[in-house]
Length: 398
Image (cartoon, rainbow, N blue to C red; front, side):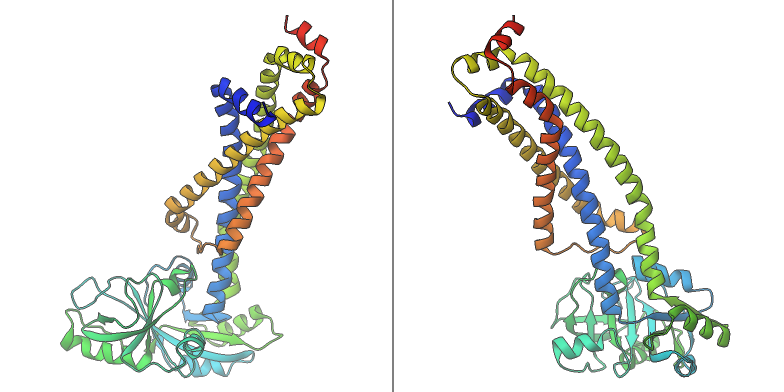
């Protein structure tokens, strides 16, 4: 009988102990996999969201800076307004390289809107650096006033039609996911189309929009290279005290901070759990080895060499560690898929799964970690058992 078959037989003979060791390894593997996926997902979303946003800062009316951070991180719909002439003033501030105004409208939970409580973002196609670059690269065309681009979370497809405040739009394209709800759950409309929608709402919709033609919600900024963003922000707020600057770097730093505290606490708890689990697995496996002293002696008496005994135990550890690692990965995936929205809201962070290649590499790494942990925990009883002589083994077993 091969060492592998003997290992399988031995594990089946002690199901309670086998399951206890397996669960210990599964808990370690699951925690490691879930924490790493969460961390990678937040960072992945931050990088893609920042690239899609294309701005170094957003300028909003005084008192709306925290709402703006919330919009960017968790995507909660919000609308506020200021005079459109601030864009020209911002363009003249030293350190500002480019500006692009946006207008926020929240869709109503009424029959005049296909999708309710959604951010409708009006943008200027001539100045915009959030959607326009994507249009040039992907659609290779400009949008008409009656066309829109939707985020990946909007339940509609390109070629379809969508209506807001009685005005119907053609869906020209759908953005790839970024994990930032500000982008993924919004509808982007050329500024002229939004103005037409607002002007026609009194006649065509159940709710009239009271937004003036000379109002905007925010101005996206790009700064000159080699300037300190904080200095430009202070310069803007000093010159225009009615405005507040929300730096993209601050928003991303907030997202990382929101996740860092619970992750550090969980990692600390995980390290403690790992040490305790190693001790527990080692003790359980040591008891298992002690109970099988006679079996080891008989195998040695029948001609089994030390490497054969080692092979049996290593096969057992390999089976336990592999099964525990796979079980932990499966549980980690189920946990993340089930609670990703809650994690996003609770920690106020964006969330976008890394690529399949990253996930597969992580799975292999976690399996390697599980195997290494199993070997570390059981190394002492395995080495001790494999070195025992046939006579001593049979004598100790009584």
